[in-house]
Length: 180
Image (cartoon, rainbow, N blue to C red; front, side):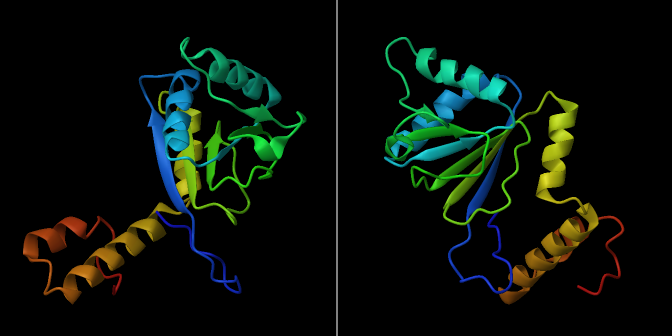
């Protein structure tokens, strides 16, 4: 889901946003694997958390997750942040020039400028985390559904129509008569 830059922006590419709902693994188990996939592409990442305590736990997890290897990383306040392939922080910053931002524990970025991709990672077994993530996606679900419906219909009309069953399927309850 691309994030659209606000009006008056320089028109730079919008960051691609992805959501990872953890239901079988803890963040300390899943994040190293996700970050390894980022590093396998030879790109850097910033991990933004909401507390120093969480960063300490993740710092340890990145060093000891796989006994045969480790994920090189640094934290805010440590030397040479610009050299770190993975940078852990509680402050919005990008000292290593990372194209990937990973948001955990409900952390929220005011801006995605400078990032090509943003990954929201949350605990799917935590009702509060799930609700917070839902609100990050779209606090107003009616507007979201209306926009999704409008885009699906517009795209399919451009190629010759949806067909009756599909048109009824995308017409969410309460969306009739929206004029879109």
